[in-house]
Structure formats: structure tokens, C-alpha cells
Length: 179
Image 1 (cartoon, rainbow, N blue to C red):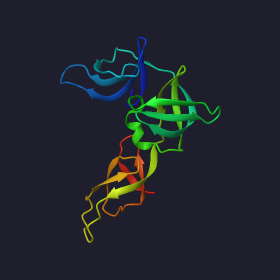
Image 2: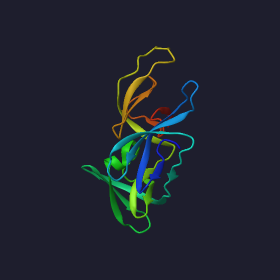
Image 3: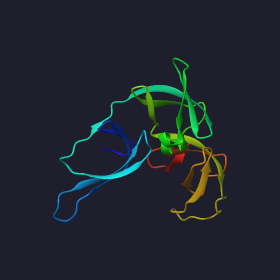
Image 4: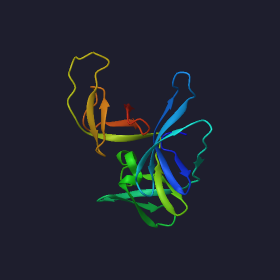
């Protein structure tokens, strides 16, 4: 099991938000998992032992183009059939910080129901706003916040300026390099 995975418990689908492996003293280890129910949107925490089994949901992926955001809905178009559909902000989660209009991404379907998107490992986004770097500062661990075009705030090195394009990891949300 890993973060972002979709699992099936009974008839319900759950997205794994966080997981932590715990090994207390002389007891057996377990995994503490936080889920979000896809259909109802409710959060739940659960402890899973090594004997417990969960089924991974079988998903179909279709290439779709992200068109636009309308209030709380994100609209997508199938690149083969030109059929349009929308997904809510809750269904997409943190993925909304990494998608740009006109970009093509893989949308995951469970049956005919869209349940999420599969992001690439990294995305290149343009820096919209950041404070100017301090000239002559040579400390290697200096960072400053920068806002990218999707509204995501990322910590970047001092040499990044507004207008630069940076590469961001979609798994951790951290700055990787200048693009």
C-alpha cells in the first residue's frame, strides 16, 4: 500500500491519504492508515495488521485534456471521443495544484465513474510571485517561498525569480530544479 492508492473495502472505494508503519516495542508492527471515502468524502483512520487484507481497486485509465475550472468542478475532455465530464475538487485532492488548462493527463475510472487522476512524476510550472533574492548571500541552505501559476506555494533557492519555470515533484510538492 502507498499514498494515493485506491483500495476497495466491502463495496466502498477509499483513497489512501497517509500511511505510517508503526512497530511498538515488543509488539507486532502495524500500519496506521488514513482513508478518504471516494463517494461520501468522509475521512477515516484505521490500523491494519499483517494478517489483514485489502483489495486494490482495478481502474481503467483514459487520456483526457483538462479544459477549465468552473467553481468547484474541473472539466475534462476525452481526447478520442471528445466527450466531456467534470470532477469535484474533493475527488482530485492535492492534484489540482499540478494541472494546467490544455494539459493532457490520465484520468482514472472505476467502472464508468471518474475517481481521480494519475499525475506525472514531475511538472514544470512558472513562478508568478516570489521575494527577490539577497545578493551576495552564500549560505547554501537558504530558501524562500514562491507562488507558481496554479497557486501552489513552493520553497525555492534564492536565485529563482518571477517568470522562471521550475520543476516540481508531484509526490512531495518540493522544488527539484530550474526547467
